[in-house]
Length: 210
Image 1 (cartoon, rainbow, N blue to C red):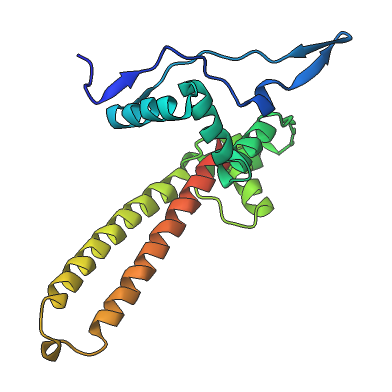
Image 2: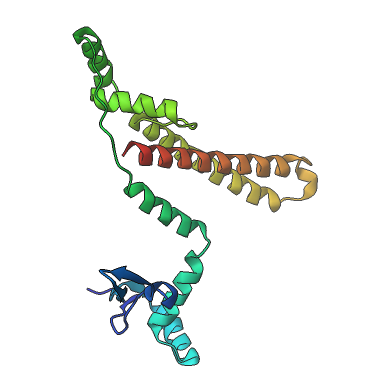
């Protein structure tokens, strides 16, 4: 059963704006223009109405409007830089390194690795090597899970603080210590900051260890 709040747009050709879509490159002495690509996706019924209205008012196709908005949003933004970074990293050439250990050394590494989330000697060595290369600490899976749980608890505390602050705001000033609300607001801000830092640390570790 289709969701009534979603619509499909198939009536237009969606491609990058002319600045990108019409870019030409040489192919065996000939200049060949990049072709547009037809795609489909879902948008909310409200956004579809807005898009239809804009198309009528501006006398532009829905495709042109969406391409223009996407281009303006990505140009010079962190989203665009992140996409370019992903493209570059996907082109990296990986090197295989061979290391020799004595049997005793290997057995010891294997024993240690099996007691960690890395489970294998190569992954164990890679994990600790990367922790020496990067400035920020890289977490293993157990640490990521533990911090994710901590972040969840911090968020719950933040919700409780907000509820207390709302109740205090309904009370008369005479019943509230002068610096209590300020303290609660400062504490809530710190909790939010800690939660964001934990999220970023876990995300970065997962990306590096993939």
